[in-house]
Length: 216
Image (cartoon, rainbow, N blue to C red):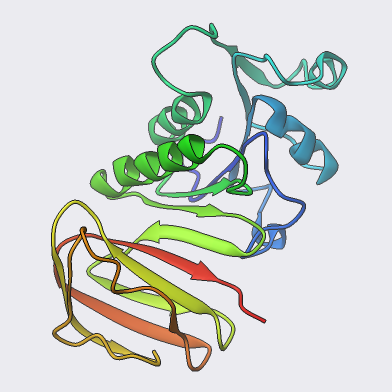
């Protein structure tokens, strides 16, 4: 296990064939690669070697798992408090990761997607940059000062999380945010647009969940 890894990649059971930022960004020599149960199938398809395979192993192919007998494996009981992904995140935190990408298609069960956002909030509270990446979306919590690099025309939705949030200013968005206050009870930050390939947002207060979506 690399205790000084800069970035960790968590492959869940529904990891897509490609993610928003691209799997090409993975550095097998420096980054942690974690297979969460059946996420091992995507790791294998990408030709990567997992630093850890973790979960209750209820959905991973036993024959595939046997191919990685030389890699660290943590088998947990199916009756437990934490989800497999949460256990993987805790392992990454212990390994010193400061940047975590959760690869998940954000389809299927909505409760699972919400649980992933709770995982992001936990990372955010610890000062760790975390995000969920599907094939067409990136989900994360904004920092006080956030630079977003993306293709022109991507949609950006911003949701107040837990309490009201106020923006100090913004650059590069179709709808400027300076002085805007968003509240959890009202969806008023949906479908902004990045006008060029870059946008900057500064928060004055509060917590904002950001969803960046490719838009053709």
